[in-house]
Image 1 (tube, one colour):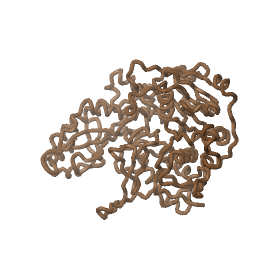
Image 2: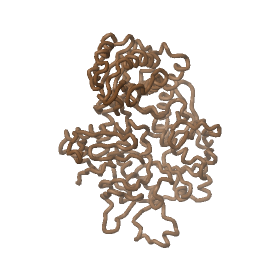
Image 3: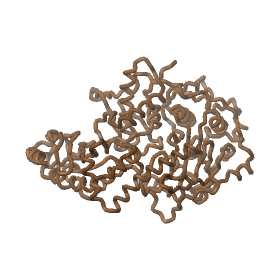
Image 4: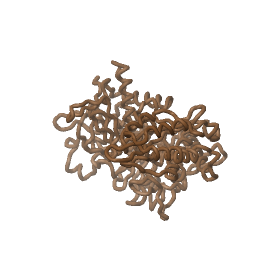
Length: 582
């Protein structure tokens, strides 16, 4: 701190770019501040990156909160949110030129994710945050050292004190931290039980599933919201190690259909199930909605790129002799895109696929009797999913959950049938079997998708050529401010708008650096091409062992870990993707 103040004074009213001289570490009474990445223009986006380091003995965080990976994740998530709350409470934001003079964190969702913003070692906890130092004046601006000192000596000190020191927490804050840890511990026990009982999803009784709005994932505040209650026939009770238990609905492996009238809660239940691959923060309402980690949402995606995917189990050869056992397209149709999405998900290791009738290509799902009278089989290359769904389950052990409101065909194929009636869930399996008869089986052969496509070594080139300026950048990895689900990577624009289970924007940026890490490893292996599944498994293992820092982002502290299934989805949507032809 004594070192920082004179250095700030020496930079007062100097050109703003001179703040790069601040890069380094400075000791405060209870923490250490480090400037990691310094931006030389006020209001730059991305802004500068700094970190604080607090000795664990000084923080007095209870040791038992840091003994397992699940608990550490919960504490890390709590701390970054607590730091965000401290910014809102103590900091005067946007005090300088062009909105400079602010603290920030990465965008945080309702999920608890592995991030590189909070890290632990044996001696300390580190938190990386976004900082924009203040500028003033005309033109490019000069450094406002006086306001910077206020930011760091007063506001940051207050934020750190409120965030990290357990001895300063009031009872409400201590209880909240305990709740974060309890969610992770309970969720881990639910997952273990699900694996033992062959369950694909669990929805606890009294869960609050409706969201605030279609663009706001926080829980609905409406007094009319009904909490979830399990049908008696599907209700299970899971014993917990603390002597308590948790009760709710267990969905078994196989084929499940969720039906009901419009606005009765079908899609709300599905949205909760697909979000259940992540842990949720206390108060979200879906803390104990748990879905098997390999679940992937499948939908139609017109216009996407497809490269050398075998969609022949679902779509036969197309007009003009176009083969579908190695299908490529720069502008896929609804049906071909949905077929490719299924194959790619299975190829990446998913054995739980989720479908909502509203986002599917109808002609891919079914062919009704009337259209069969008009078009004979030779005129329609699409083999409806309805006719293959049981074979996919029986032969590939791919479980599926469908939301259907107007397609009763799938009820004929379902092991479990659920009815949503005014947000009440009923088990109508027996009624369906009584009305529609026994499950309609079929026998369709399926190829082994797992080893079908191997990546060429020259994939994922990050170089960007600006043809207007005749300039080449060695690397461009950029998430778009106005399109948070799109990623600029090299010369490719990767559109992930329809990849439903991306939880927050920092996962998009992390995907970009995952691609860069994969490129480096592909180059090392040289002439030994491997499958997409091999590479996403390899990278997941590396990140689990060493953390997100192995991705070497330009701005540390700005990444959230994506699932390997979303990484595979990104790979498959790269228009320059090259597959080795065997």
